[in-house]
Length: 125
Image (cartoon, rainbow, N blue to C red; front, side, top):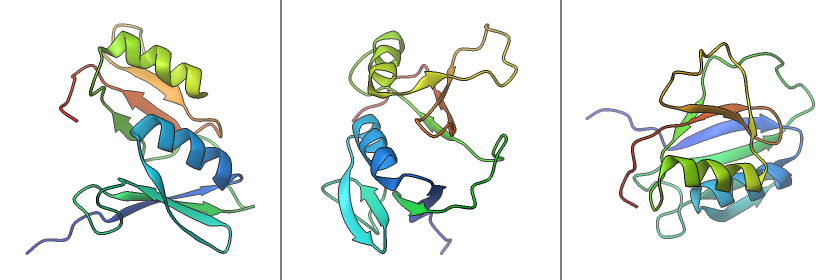
């Protein structure tokens, strides 16, 4: 038996803001609150399900600069261009990490500047 990723922890200045953003991006719901932290995840599974939850932990000691780990997302019910428009409307913004412009993905940042990529391949919901 191997280990499985159960949750991703993201230290942030404003857990409320990022919970709204990532719930909108991923179709997640709020699962729990504890001491200012908010855990979000799939409504039908919650913590311990096949998909990891995201634990948004309030912090005043935030790391600046490019993080060594980022999230990749794929559209599930539309093409990449339509999903890009939706993510930008939710508050994502384009991010420049040195890409050439020929990549088949878009590099974006969430409202606190955490980079993530929108991949081209459409996945099943």
